[in-house]
Each structure stands twice: as C-alpha cells, then as structure tokens.
Image (cartoon, rainbow over all chains, first blue to last red; front, top):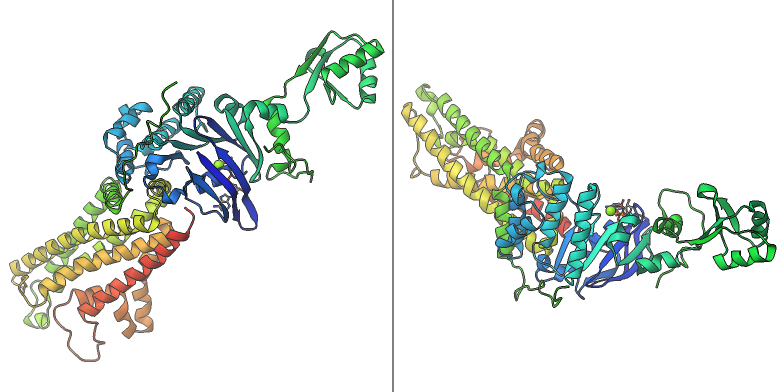
Length: 312
Length: 271
Ligand SMILES: Nc1ncnc2c1ncn2[C@@H]1O[C@H](COP(=O)(O)OP(=O)(O)OP(=O)(O)O)[C@@H](O)[C@H]1O
Ligand SMILES: [Mg+2]
C-alpha cells in the first residue's frame, strides 16, 4: 500500500505537486490520471525517493522509500523506459540490479522469460525497440518480486498488442495481491486497466474514486432525443433551462434535464417522442470536464468548480 | 485467483549492505564498453609514448646525461594515461546521468552516502590496480629501451625508483577520482571533462605566463616534476618543485575536495 499525505513539490514558484493526499491499496490496479504536466511523474519520483518533497510525505507500507531494507524486493518501479546504459546487455543490466539487493541470479532469467526477452538477453539494450525497452523496464521492476509496483506511462508508444500485453500484465500483478500504481494521461486506457482512479490536475487532487463512480459523479448526463417535433421541443426545453444540440443521424442531444423530466414535458405539451435515451458520459468527457480548469498551458476561466470537486 | 498471502514479499532478514552495492558497482564497471575501450587506448598510448620518449633519449653526448633521470624518462609517457583515466573517471558517473541509469541505481540502493562510498571505492580500486600495472609496465619498457640503447637506466632498486613508480600509479588514480567528483558536480560528461582538462592540462599553460612559482601546485606539474622525478633538479633560479610526498598529499586533497563537493550535492539533489 502506498500513502501520500499532503505531498507538495515546487519547481520555482509554481507547485508541480500541490498538497496531494491519496492511497493506493493492495490487490487493485490504481490508475494515476492527469493531463500532461499535472505532476504524475513528479509524484512517482517522490514516492520512489528520487525527489524530496518540499512538505508532506509518501510512504510505502508505512515507511519512507529511503528506509526500506531491501528496496528492490519491496518496490518495483518503471519510471523511464530507457533508463539503462545502451551499451550493456539486457542480462547485464538486470544482473547489476539484482546484486544491489542480493537477489539470486536465477531471477534475472526468470523475469527475462516472463517479459519475453530471453532470446535477446545478450543483446545490447541500446538497440532495443521502444516496446522491448518497456519490457526490460518491467522485467527490472519485477526482479525483486515486489509487493508494490509503480509504472509511469507504461504503454506510451506501444502498439495495440503491446498495450494489451501490459494491461493484462498489470491486471495479473494486482490479482496476485500486489499494489499496482500506474500513471497515464489516457482515460480510455485507464478505464480498461484500472479498478480505481486517482485523478490530478495541476498537481492537485481532483478525484479519488472507482472508475464507475468517476463517470457517475462527473457533471451532467446528456439525453438523446429523437423526435419529429423539433421546434416544439426547442422552445419547451429552452423554457425549462435545458440546452438542445443536433446529434447524430437527426437525433437531438439534450443537456440539463433528465430523461423523465423530458418525458413529462413531452406529455404536457403533446410532443411526439420516438426515442429518449440517457447517454452515459464517456470517460473522456468526464475527464475533460473535471480537468478543463486544471490543464496547464491553456488559459482557463477562474471557475471555482474544481476546488469543490468530487474528492472522497 | 491465487492465494494472496504475500508469496512475493519474501525478503530475507537484515537489509542491503555496502558489499551488495559494491559488487553491483563493480559489475557495472566491468560490463561497460567504455571500460574496454579506455583500457586499450590507454595502454596503447602509454606504452607507445613511453617507447618514443625513451628512444629519443638514446645516443646523446655524455653532457646530455648529466642529471639525467631514467625513471622519470620512462614515466612521462603516462601523461596521456592521466587524461584518459580522467575521462574514464568522469564517465563512470556522468554516463549514469546521461542514460538515466542513475534513477535505477537510486531506486535499488537509495542510501546515497553508502551508494557513493561504494562507487568511489570501486572506481578507486579499479583505477589504482590498472594504473599501477600500467606504470610498472611503462617503467620496465622504458628502462629496457634505455639500457638496450646504451643510455643510463634504472631498476626498481635504484634510489627513489620504486617510490616514483608506485606514486605515479596512485597519482593517476587520484586524478580519475578528482574527475569523478567533477562528474558528480556537473552531472554531464561535457561539463566534467571540460573542467578536468581545463584544470589539469590548460591551467598550467595559462599559469606559465602568469606565475611560475604557483605552477608547482598544478597536478600535471606535481606529477612530472615531483612524483615521477628521482633526481632533484640543480639550483640556478629554478623554483624547487614540491617533494613527492607533499605533491601526492596535495593531489589527495584536490581529489577529496572535488569528491566532497560532489557528494554533498549528490546527497541533497533530486535525481
Ligand atoms: N526537474 C524539474 N524542474 C523544473 N520543473 C519541473 C521538473 N520536473 C517537472 N517539472 C514541472 O512540474 C510539472 C509537473 O511535471 P510532471 O513531469 O510531474 O508531469 P506529468 O503529469 O508526469 O506530465 P506528463 O503526462 O507530460 O508526463 C510540469 O509543469 C513540469 O514542467
Ligand atoms: Mg510524466
């Protein structure tokens, strides 16, 4: 289990991570979601003791990373896919890592086998493709058979097959009871991989919730309406404070009212309804909505909506 | 679903220690391509220059050999080795920063002081063993050329010869450690090597025109005039070089300052 408490890190005046508190429980894949530059990598570096927080703490099983007796046997991290010396072979890269924590050398071949790199074990890692590099990084993270695993954007740049492989791998690790914390800026990917989400924007916590809750709690749902009486609905819905947009294939998208409310209006005004369907907000929409004021490098309205977000 | 009673977290008692980290660092040095390249280039350059220098000191008139120092003559060919040794020392740490390996290293061994002591111990041992072997080889080669050509030569039993050989090897290792310190400070190969070459090879050229007496404190001058020398230069206005012991201790100090500054930054800085 990972616990971050009031984690804060500034680079210059602007905080990269701002008073961040969350938990990553064992046995689940927890997705760490946020737009580019929102502080995901910085947070992960602080958890792994690479960066020192300005204030707050990040603990692994109640301990600070630097005080772990056998770091590699307790925490496996993939923070940067290419973090190996290009001239060393994959096997030698894993061998020096294993030595630091007195990990038996047979583990080197085991993890190489596990990630499917056995046949290129004696090739220089600098020649590896991005996918192979990611696999080597995952092998390194698994070397000490750790209970806690952190992956920073593990599917970045992978092809669909590689993405699916990583996804299944993460799910399997969590099923084994491990703590799996994986960052991404792609909500669609996280919706397939993660059980829980920690969502941040500009270094601040926006939501800590299950994937299903995340969608349910985010903003208004829309309702799809198919009707021949467009003009009638336009005025009636406008009067009720809803907005009406043209959707796909002649349908209309209503926002601001629920399907029963729209049905009642139709009955009241005698308007014909051919179809009336609540549309689940897509994860992308939910994510965009929650983070729109928190995206860096974009002028944002100073809405206070985010501060009163859906944090549990 | 499998039994989740922590089949994985089966770490042995105790914690990782210096010996584990030192072994790991030793394996790193041995599995670097730059190690082999540096080794070959250094040996080839050192022995070639040694042979050439010794050869150039053959067949002169008797006057030429007044105050002639066969030991020093056989060792000056190691100056290029001091340069490659310095580059190698810097690369051992800057290579980790360039490749990002340093993060993996720190994630595996986050106690930074312990890690650094292990790195320095491995670098020092590797460089000391290598440069001592090279220095002895150069000495024997140089003496063989000198005596073969009928010029005065020395043996390890000659006054000061063994001391000069041993200290020269140690001095080159210390230069590599100083450069390692620069690597820690700058974290970039270019910065570290530029400062190493600047201090060791360019500074003496600049100082020659400014302050002759202070030249004695410059590493390369200590190396050639104090450490390698077994014949004290005659009087006659020449500034007396530092004694070999003082010179070597000064080099220890230089390396220590560079390492301590580098270590202080390394322990504090974000990786
Ligand atoms: N070493 C550093 N020095 C200065 N600023 C930094 C440093 N590291 C990160 N930052 C800044 O901190 C903020 C958060 O960066 P971080 O890399 O943690 O974001 P991220 O969520 O991982 O983004 P991405 O999705 O692009 O990987 C950014 O504004 C970034 O510019
Ligand atoms: Mg990142």
